[in-house]
Amino acid sequence: MSTASTRAYTEIRQALLDREELALVDVREEAPFAQGHPLFAANIPLSKLELEVYSRIPRRDTQVTVYDNGEGLAQRAAQRLRELGYTRVSLLEGGLEGWRRAGGELFIDVNVPSKAFGELVESQRHTPSLAAQEVQALLASKADVVVLDARRFDEYQTMSIPTGISVPGAELVLRARELAPDPTTRIVVNCAGRTRSIIGTQSLINAGIANPVAALRNGTIGWTLAGQALEHGQSRRFAPVGEASRLIAAVDARRVADKARVGRASLADLQRWQQDASRSTYLFDVRSPEEYEAGHLPAARSTPGGQLVQETDHFASVRGARLVLVDDDGVRANMSASWLAQLGWQVHVLDDLAPGDFSERGPWQAPVPAPRQAEVIDAGTLADWLEHGDTAVLDFTSSANYVKRHIPGAWWALRGQLADALAQVPPAQRYVLTCGSSQLARLAVAEVEALTGQAVFLLHNGTAGWIDAQLPLETGESRLASPRIDRYRRPYEGTDNPHEAMQAYLDWEFGLVDQLARDGTHGFQVI
Image 1 (cartoon, rainbow, N blue to C red):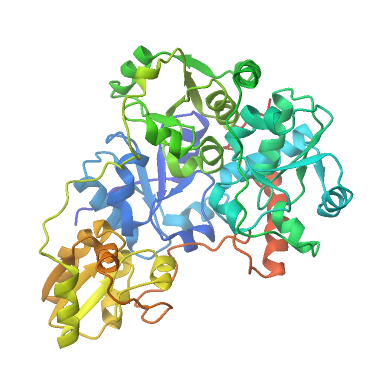
Image 2 (cartoon, rainbow, N blue to C red; image 1 turned 90 degrees about the vertical axis):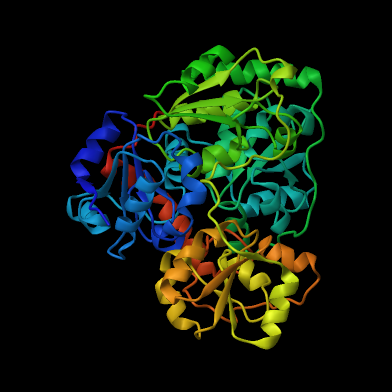
């Protein structure tokens, strides 16, 4: 394995200040990443690097710096990136500890740039908010109030404020007038914690909506800590928006985008940028996934606007790149772009699109390397082999999916820690690899062969194929060959988090503005 060059903290800090393109990649799993990382680090775990890196770092000669915290992952990641065609790959000098020793600030949690920015917005704009008890009193008194939930629909369904309607963030300015047509109706915007309710509330204020608007302070966490009951399994969603409301919202959104200095672009501009080898250009469709699948621009990625602003580091992992946003209404792209511009991105909105431009159909497909060769078996064959013994099944899906359901006897493993995982699995004459679809498992076939010296097979269509064959399943943490560190458990998700964890999360968010100031590289500008 050849040795990659190194890049020092001071070089990366200066590149951030100069708005140069760079990707600073933490190749650990998400849980250790969330324990501490630089502000603009993107988490792309080694275990699924090949499946994510082409979409997240699209230009192969991007300046990419990878790091870990002494686990030995970064060298392997650098080698793999070179094999994938990346030509300017370096290791962070001293790894994460080197960053800290050099004076670099470390941030906990995930999607930190957006969360820190949300706190900065509230501190500078004094975004109005209401405590959970105040909102509960309004609802109890049957006041003229509408609660709009700015999270993804699946998050809303898990838990929601009583009477709340699902209106994911980028939809708020487009749809608020339909949901609260009387300008005296109070609008309360909520999320699970703080960021999306602050950004959603401020979006409506920036757009000039006449209604009184406030964020639910501390979201569903605040509601829970106040001892108030949440609803579960709700399905209230926005209705189609009328043309009159859309036109008003489009004028409002364009005014906000202009104030934030969002660029304008045509299809010809986009095509020129896509052929420019010196800059990275991302094309994001910020409408709902259903609208995207019904028709979208070629090469556009589906990124509903509220989530794009919340999780920008996950979608655009090259800081300093060019972002191009598209919708078909003149509202969602402009509002999302207004926030991205304030977050320090060079962002443009595509104008003057015709219905015929949305010529592609179906869900977004991530660009991935050509599939590796593997000997494939079907679910029936695996069932026979398991009956006769001498076969070990390794499951590379997410640990949450594995716990939910898996093939009886299967061991869950992290591909990035394969040697350690195999040490936990009793030796077998042959190994069968699976995951949800077999895409990730296929990447591990050659590695398992090399480590075991045995025959290795790939399950056709993965565990989905086993389920389609109506074969039995197991649940629970029955055979974990790797620690469950692939996902950080967010204190604001689900319904069974300890109250102490919720309060600690809020306390951390309140401190982010001071931490941004200490870091000094953010480049955020609140309008």
